[in-house]
Length: 548
Image (cartoon, rainbow, N blue to C red; front, side, top):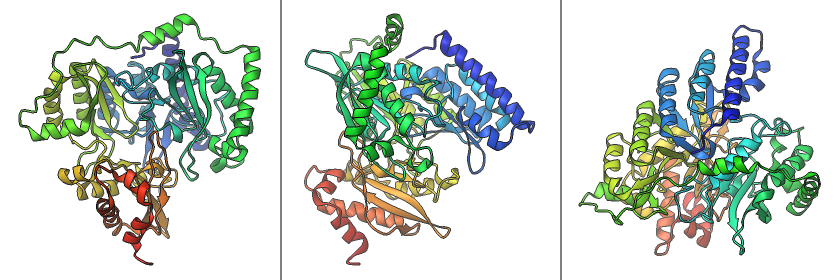
């Protein structure tokens, strides 16, 4: 894992003390809320419906056991005993008191954590594949370049006040677990025929009120040119992105307005000018230092190459759904679901965070990952330790065997917390989870991505759900709109709205109708998204609305 150098430590420490002074001024009335707003947003602090919310950065989703213990400590001392892991691989604390925020940030700084650039019109937390460094599918570990981008973009003077927020995601494999095509910039690590590392560059993706799939503007950008090329993209956006309308200010609107060819042409013009002045040259020793922190752990030579289920069906179910192949023989990637049946997606108590930290230290070289689907991962677990790990997770109510299944639901905080929301998302996720709780039924359904957003801002990624649900407001009454056919993987697609929205008393039955329609329509070994792409939306519409 990456370790702070003296510059990181100094920067974060100075930011904490700067914000402490700003909070003191706000509490004394020297700053109005409007004056305080841009200052708090630069430090990850939002004002939600009932309280302030602090969003803490987890760069590229990688956490140490020590850091997880500190998050548990913050939840216990400064919040209501839990934290919420988000679709940007961050964690949010929903109930901190304003006067305690500087103390929280100071505590986080002791374990090399911060909240810088988790909000505001800047380059946000860089996200990456949660299996980075563990899967044999990847060309190279995407966390290395993610860390370099983090350092380059942090408080970059040219990009501190962009037209709107800016999000970058990186994958190191053809299999996309980072949803790169629905980001402002998506990067895929590539290797050419000469064995050289480079990047495919996607620009202009995003969700929200104008969902758009990103456009490929460079099929292979040499590794040494990446930061300069990103700078060219950012300059074109910063100069030409709209600032008169926040709803049309994202880079996806600019790319769509210019067209990908013209946008790419302008980026190339800017890139040529940058190259004339000289590409950004990273110090070789610094690159080597960063690479050294992402080298493979000290794996053992493990003779065990298969798992003995010992007749334990519950363990077998968990292994089937919650583990993935590891690049190292004798090891496995273990996913921890934060979606217990009837629970709140993405939430973990302080006690659970401490348990996960202890298990990571014991079984996974002290390393934990956060996924953009609001779950956690222990990336390096020996096969011979898997049963003991599962027993400990089961005792902590963390062994729900549902990764990728119908109850592994993404949901934003919705109207329970967010001032922007039109409808509740959490209770709906809980009801759907209870409706599909039977594990045999979930296995029969197969892979199914249900994603729920409480408003058009799409924090629950409903546009790319196999089944997407959007909360809408009709004269103060909550309704839910269904879309079908979305996907955030390497075959990215945007869901299509089926028809009129459903009231909260009808939406659960409607979702079950969609699933039942799929079950009677599928071919052997077909999952939901494949069936949908084969038969289209019409059968689902007919089942939901009849001939009307």
